[in-house]
Image (cartoon, rainbow, N blue to C red; front, side, top):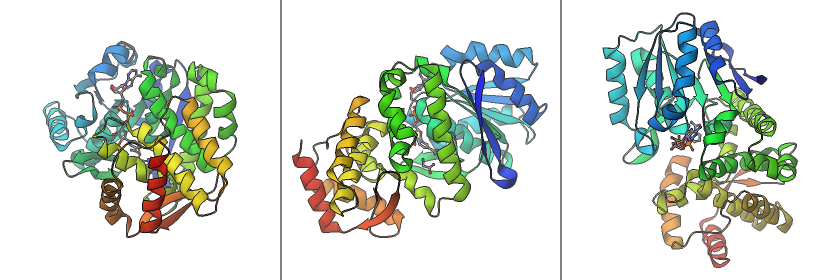
Length: 363
Ligand code: NAD
Ligand code: GLY
C-alpha cells in the first residue's frame, strides 16, 4: 500500500512522491490520473527489466496503456550522449510525440539518462521516475537534476527537469545487491548528519531492521529523506546556494571515485568523504572528537569504508582542484557546525594538505 505522499512544491513544476511497499503495479493508476492517455516509453536496463518487467507489463496492459520498451545497457556507461542518441532514435521511429511520456524504471543511471532524454526530446516531454535502488529512492529521483556524462567529466551535459511524479516501491530493494544497498545507505547517513533527528536516531537504533530490509522502516527512511531533499530543492531548485549542502562528503568522495577508477562506488567514496568532512569540521573547531567517532561508528556499522584510500596527497589535491574550478575558487567543503547544521567553507590549501596527510596516516 502507499504509506506516504511527499509533495515537492515548485509552483507549476510541483509533483508528488508516492512511497509504499509492494505497490509497483499501482503506478499505472497515477500515470493515467496525471498524464491521461499518453503513450509510454519505458526506459530501463536488462537487470531491472528481468526482475520487474512482468509486473510493469501486467499493470500497463490492465489499464490498456499503449507502451514501447527501450532497453539501455546496465552501468554508468549508459549515461552517455551515444546511448541518449540511440534512445532519441527509437522514440522518433516509434512515433513518440510531445503529449506522450517517458517512464524511468531503474536506479540513478536510468533515471538520469531517461530524465535527460525526456527533457530534450521534442523540447521536453513528461516523465515519471520509478526508482528501484536505495540511492535513487532517497536521492537521485527527486529534485530534477538529469544528465549524461561527457568523456571529460561526469554529469557535464544536463538540465534541471522535474518529473510528473515519483513512485517509490521499497519492496524493489529486496533484490538489490548488498553493495548497492550499502551505497544507498551512505546517502541516507549523509541526510542524518546534515539534518540530525529523527534520522540520526533511526539509523542507529534500527540498524538491524534496516539491514534486514524491513519494509516499514525502509518506507519511513525513504519518506524522511524525500522530505529533506524535497525541502532543500524547494528552496534552491537551481543549485545556487543551499542545495550544495547535499554534497556533504562529496568533495573528497568525488576525488576518491575518480582516483580509484570507480572501484569505489559513489556511496563508498562518499562514506570516506564524510569521515574526512567530520575531521575537517573538528579541525576548524566546529565539532568535537565525539562527532568524528559517531561518523566512523555509523558508517562502519553499514559495512561502508571509513579510512582513506592509499593515494598520494598531490594526486588527491590535483583532482579536488580540477573540481574546484567549477566551484568558483577555494577548496570548497561542506562541514558541520554541529550535527544537523551544515555550512560551506573554503579550506586553505595548506590546511587541506595537512588534514589529508593526517587522515591517510590513520590507515
Ligand atoms: P545504478 O543505477 O547503476 O544501479 C546500481 C545497480 O543496481 C545496477 O546494476 C542496476 O541494474 C541494479 N539495480 C537497480 N535496481 C535494482 C533492483 N531493484 N534489484 C536489483 N538490481 C537493481 O546506480 P545507482 O547507485 O542507483 O545510481 C548511481 C547514479 O546516480 C550515478 O550516475 C550518479 O551520478 C547518479 N546520481 C544522480 C543524482 C541526481 O540528483 N540526479 C544524485 C545522486 C546520484
Ligand atoms: N544529489 C545532489 C543534488 O541533487 O543536488
